[in-house]
Image 1 (cartoon, rainbow, N blue to C red):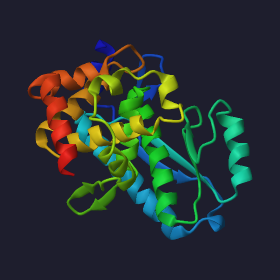
Image 2: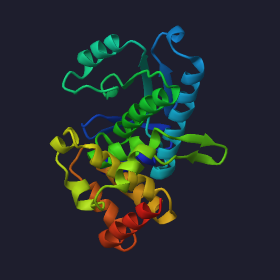
Image 3: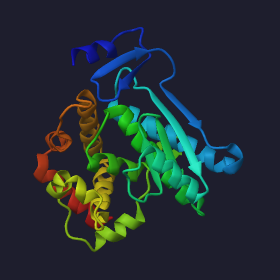
Image 4: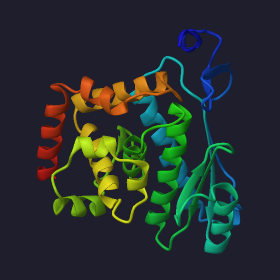
Length: 269
């Protein structure tokens, strides 16, 4: 841990690169953020690509604001977009064959986010930004619990960059689902096993993750607690840490207050 702190305050370092799950941090020079489209340009609407690029940078800047680190982490975003479903499935099989049927995924080793284009440009944008959010989360934390990674991705996919900073829209699909679901539970969300996230009824967990992160971003207290959680998780990158524990300890009033305020907010949305 001392080595990380030393790197963060080394004047010569312009950024810090996380070596995936090795516990090593390498001080480097150069831009902290880079974006590259690796699809054939003629196959993708350039306006959509530009919109995705602006959103991706907005996600990175949102992370910067939440982490408030003196030296930023390096994030190399490489994006592949596929219009052909067969070619997309072949790419998924070559990189992440263990995944079920999906419309987007990320692969850490090539620093790659991949999305299947939809007839709707809005849906295509959401898919791409969702996977880019995952890629940035892994770049920052080396790994994260599902509720945190999916909550951030579900929120980030709707990002709108304005002159005053990023704005995030309510996810109508999740909101409709939560309106008729049982009351939210922090324990259920934090303790859900991996198999629950791939089960046929996993929609509840994705909706709860989105709602918790979105709720936290609505207040200075919530943003502070989420930022503290990400800061602590970043400090413990690739080690064992309790993100839920960081969150409830940093939220004013603890777990009981967070559970109450989250439920009250959901009823008002």
